[in-house]
Length: 357
Image 1 (tube, helix red, strand yellow):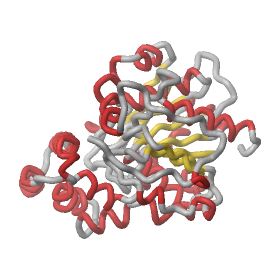
Image 2 (cartoon, one colour):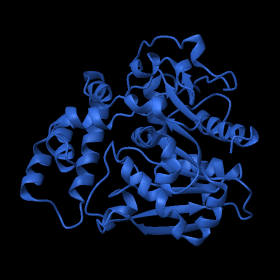
Image 3 (cartoon, rainbow, N blue to C red):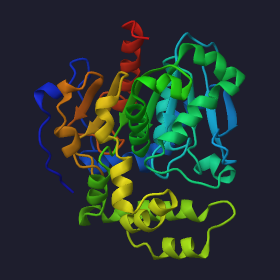
């Protein structure tokens, strides 16, 4: 499955980023994407992360919904003076998703404490929630960050502040939150967020929806729709007969979003849901150093939104665009550690060393 993508504009790449070259035999966007799915749970990261102290965290959302979320805190045995990295998973993902564990294990090796929450209704949070996250759940993320200080061990780490990373759909949520809040982000989240990064974020949800419905993406589409339905069916207390019928009848992700996700969350339909939840329109309001990592051969997300941004007009945005890498893949010829995780660490180190914290 070959994709032709436009080149990276010369002014769209920060000089400090290391070059990315796809690792054989995982060549092309599809194989880069599939390697994460096929081999992600078999490698070093799951062995590495088990060598670090871990703490299970369960905290209530502060919105009087009665819902709570769970998460996993890992930290070096001897805590360094580094901020806490919070990793936000993507669509149908969890704290234990392979890409999440891989990022956490590498950042721990670099001396960063890491917290991986399960979003509302996902993974370990599923049995604790009546509601479920969606692409625009920036309010949930703000709530998660607000209540972290209730955990004594995390409260100590928060003295060094937070670094925030979102993968795929989680990346859109992170960017949306920072764009909505603007200069008031620290007050809204009641913590100091020093830098953020997104990896393969669908910042234009309507365009991403259109891409995933293309015939070339039929297998991906079926895979995601099946997992989305499975998550919905697992709602504690069950679903109404009407919702069950809507979910079962949905033949496409668009129909699922239009007839179930949008209506459950106060949107008029899928088009309204995508328009209001996309981070693209809010990027200009972000007031914190932000790195957007994206591969132009991503089979799930079209490149237009990233290609058409006038990066120089955005004071806080830094492009991390590559020709290859797929969707949350970035398996390169230099290291067994995915390129994007090495870049995240380098980006955060630069922020700290540059005295911008």
